Length: 510
Image (cartoon, rainbow, N blue to C red; front, top):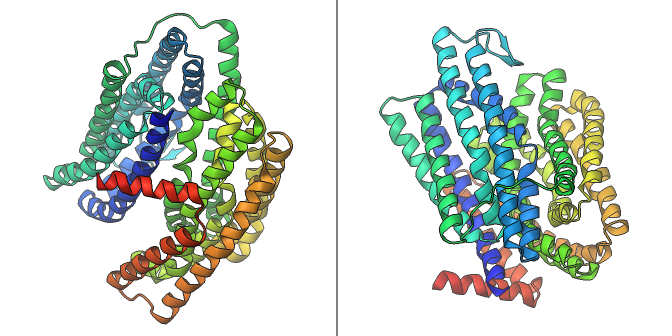
């Protein structure tokens, strides 16, 4: 148990290191890559990714099912059942891979100028169509390999071996941009970019395979699934699949609304806002998933509601500190960041991001609730309910976007999130899942008050000392970070949280 706790702590820290590196690499690498690649070639790469993105739905949400039921067999100490499960999933994924190859190959060789499978290719010349076909074919192979090989990554997650996976991810995030820039410097274009990405992806998958075989001693047993287990997995996965589709629709909703009622300029501004907000959401999603195997084990062992509620509150507090740091920091310094990074034409992106961030403090700090729903097979309600929230978002956003463009669309999303994930889901957590939501808010509200005081000080600093350069902005952010951490550590952290920090610091020293 102690080893598992250390794996979770290390995994969370390394996850944030990975996200920080990913964000910095994105800010530094993307402009250089775009200038070397050119708009036309990057457009081909983006278009191909959009096409392949829909083929990824062939996974049918089975990855979560693999982790859940593997964790269940681990909790039951049933090694044979665990290995039979892995073999069964491999057989399913081999079939999915074959379907992906056929579908991707058909799409690649059918591409031609004009409308192709819902994607506009009318302005592409024949040489670009040829390049697009090759890129789609390579990405299809990449996807097809990833389906069965992903089983081993799922096994590592179920065994809570997070340190290994995060270290590998960090190495890839550092080496891949460097390799891409070196390759592009020799004059290669989008096809070479895709080959590099595919090569690194396969290398990571192979490392997972070797780790599972050599360290965990895991060997899949190819046996048939029992019918009750098949039914249980299908029932579980179908609503994961629905949730994935709803998330995809939700991600594109406001951009489509703005494109219909406000035009391309509003879409561009909103796109910048979404890019910034995505970094924020990635930080919010990085903790909850680490606890999924543990919650599955607690469910299998019939842990009481109080034990699960205590974990929900404990993790929620840590998530709140991280999210509030980013949110309050962006409120204080985000306007200058947008001006320096994107220019004054995109200043409305600042207000859009702030509107989107604020309600997320609540529902994203409760991301462990989603893992609890999945562990207890109660995610059906969430999948169907979120579809209704998306419809509500569209209904509210259209009239508001016609008046205030991107800011109006963001306000519509704010209202939908308030009614849906915040109010309704908390009622569901309390009444159906028996989580201590009152206890959560008793912890949440005082921390928000304390963080607001620090945020106000940061806003005042930026008001009297406006950042006219990246150096000044970086200095402000560093000062704010130090003050925030010091105040929160002394004023808000409980003994568990202080001990968590001390443990991390000791590990860094070693």
